[in-house]
Image 1 (cartoon, rainbow, N blue to C red):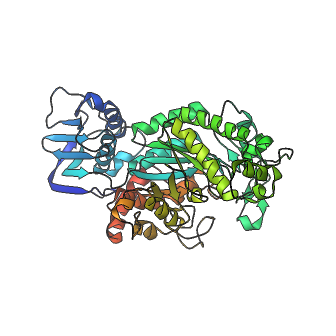
Image 2 (cartoon, helix red, strand yellow):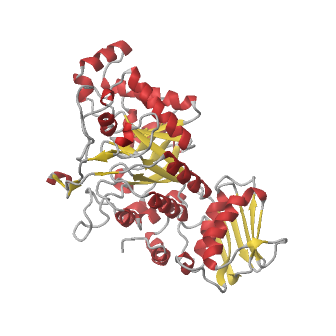
Length: 502
């Protein structure tokens, strides 16, 4: 059957069930969205309308919600008596993806709907994920991608039972989300004069203006599309560092408000960071208010990474602010800033998540740590009773080369092979059961400095994202057996036109 990710428990028996143009569908009232998804992903390409049926029987598919099952748990039974899918609220769309993979790979082909009968093997599947956070981060700040590609990434993530798309919406090189209260964020901050060519160390530029942004309407529609597939969009507005594009739009946000700065054109970390006045705090709160209005995610990512402290340390204004607040140093100031954002989000029933640098100066109560510089930040957070998402660059950075650089597209550096990804264990050794319970899961990172096109993103994501999906689902086993299933799974990706590395 070559399912990816591999289900937790599978029992097969001889025989096949046939999906035909007359196959009927019976769905609980609470399963309406899953029924629509089934018609879209299975019925339509198979040439079957999956019209409502009155009674279950050999020629029907039945969708049932079972409140006794966990939210993402499901049961899938295929027999001579028909297909029965039972699941929690978010388990049903996961089961639809499994049924889709049980069909011949041609079901994934685009184009006119197929006719005739489509064979599905008799099988009993009991399945549920090990981790509740199974994600992929897409950096749309360094390179903007068309909205249609964001939909495609949602669909590809859902196929592999990932449940989080983390959108990195802002950075030094571009601000990508419309904020109505501050129009210059997109009028100015979404556009840079040029982009780097070649590797960062070469210092070459193309001389071509570059930019783009997403309207709130576009992002709301994306969120709605993702929800039908069991995926949450987690937005990231990076602060207090990586804010050069915002400072270019509104210089008063910087520590030198009289200095006009352009949106950054060089990759890497820039020294310019937000000042910490109450006016800047208000700006951040106002921006997040509009973010919350678009994204219903429980978690809101505020970055918090790679925040240079030189400006704060050299600024008389900031040093006076330190004394006013009674803080000892710049690390404590960053912690204070993160705390203000966490308190604001908590007031609105949301949770703050940030990269592991938010540990510097002391971690804000209730904050979740995304551990990227290794596992140490996540370990420290989990042992202190904080939730953590494990995404060390050594195993989950897909902007790294996936083979030796010769013959590969230009990448930022590093090397993360398919086998390395598949070998990753999100719960570090040495954590006791209580601390391990704070590890929410893992995710892949697609930083986009060297990923200028959607095709390049797909090439760097696949097939490594297939491996990470199985790791996050919790069923990774022998690598050789996985690669056998992956060879068959690639036929599905080929039919979908995915630019998968061979």
